[in-house]
Length: 91
Image (cartoon, rainbow, N blue to C red):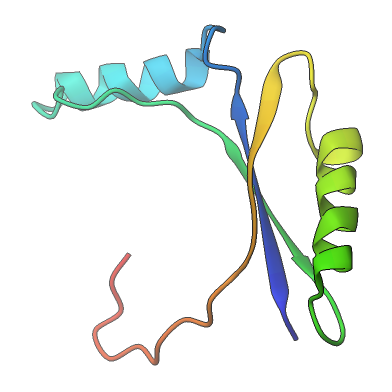
């Protein structure tokens, strides 16, 4: 069953308090070389083939329902690649 991934991020010009908190925690643990922005990831599963028309429908859903266009941008809509068989599972 194919999975379509939708990625949503806060608009670049807006403050991202969650990302700022994570960046602060990294700095406190000696890993402050990273800037952080936190977003959202949605996974939509679908029966059958993923077509260009279906991806267009998902983009419309992402814009209308999964994101708040005032404060967020939909930055990605793509078909998830199957994970390789895990031997030494890495996060």
